[in-house]
Length: 367
Image (cartoon, rainbow, N blue to C red; front, side, top):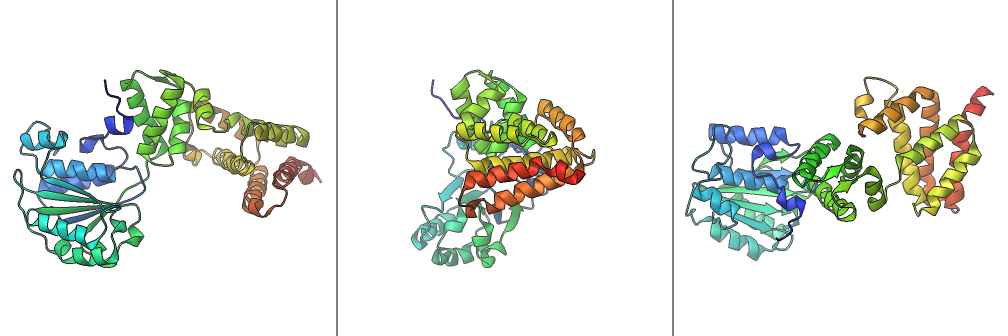
């Protein structure tokens, strides 16, 4: 049986299955419901958040001959079946990264004049539209402003600022959100359950953080971890495979700072270096750790902590041992160390001096 990567296998096929973009899917469904379809849309946002996916779902739904009461495509009519089987002549996709010349746009304009063979609309999805040349944009302007009644353009881009204002003014603009850690974890749980994979939630949190708001990246990383550890994924498997520094190092370092034990702090840092981690990566993680301890100080901000339940308890426990002034000073030292790292001649000594300074915060305060 042919293997299909999770990003393709679990690609949403209905509005309700799109992760983390409720505001956009609701607007598109309402437009279909009220039959107020614009002739041009611009979907912009970070990579892997569902721009092209939403464009395809929208294109399939407006051509569906039996739209459901919830304004989703039926997936049963001939138009839906042809779309699902990649043989629809109503939906045309153009990759502007490799088809960015005036000739490519003129060829597209010629196709626009031809009415659809089935359904009501011909939908033209232009991906990475910011890659079009200046001349191609200019050739596209008139058609984009006054296309035939049967034509709808959906432009997708990760770099909205590179698109001409004259193009922007002709489109309805939808800004896609980064996928939150919790949304990514919930979707990964669903995928893991569907694939009969046992997984610890702390491991999924690491994957979600590593994906940096991109659902496609999260699914690709999930596949990588499954290939590494099989059908049972633990937190330890995830950090080993992705080369992520264990939270435990940061907790132990904070304990050393609270005990004013600079020797232990230096030994922990030496262990981290021996494991092959870059010092700047470590100091950046330490900044994040102090930030997380700081938000745990108050019930109003504890919701800003995006980690698994077990590690959240550990954060809450250590936050009780730390004064706000102490965390402020450690964060200040760590941030300054991170900022000055590139300029330092002896980078290891630069980080070690920061660790010694953090170990002396309480002693200096007593003086």
